[in-house]
Length: 277
Image (cartoon, rainbow, N blue to C red):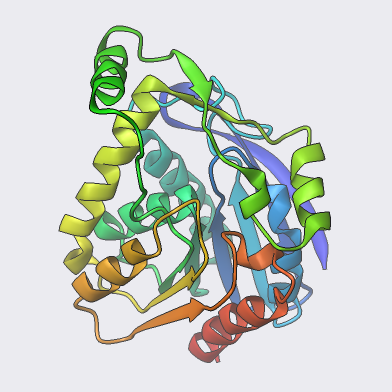
């Protein structure tokens, strides 16, 4: 296995950083869409497991994240995320030709991936969602939400803390510490990001039936960062025949960094391998 990194021009000319893990023999490619406030480097363990089965793994740092350009935690439109993802996917298709390409998205990255699949299913060989942000519980007063919507129009790039409690990422305290100590992790979101994010959730449920590739939806049962019911609602709306829902009992949000992370990682890898063999 070898590692690569590079950059590409995203929507509006924003510089997007990417990283890849490549086995000696390649029979498939997995494009990874990471979650809010983090970066693609946190998926090295998943990538290494895929490489052992001859599946290359690549992923960008979303704009406003990690080593990519853009204001931390800000987008003018959620479509900027999907546009960047499409540009990177295009590079992978040029490089790897007819090899099957799978799209894996976690948390906010799962919402990005699912949104992308509603309009860009052609050529994708499968969609995998991990604790995707398909429903969130917003426990804020109505007046505060109204102010937030107004700020999205008047001060769209105004940022604030995302309120994420890292203690609920994993039961593995070493994994939580790694997250807290990671200099590339941030907690910022903008007013515009919030309104675009919530609108994207409603939009992806409405358009779920337009996804026509095999889908694996995995959800952590004890997830306190996204609402687990969102995964079930989304799954029920899918009309594709090849679809699987897996609930990981006792898991917090980051299933790939949990105490028993080998189980969801193995499920992910085996699901892909079954479709490239």
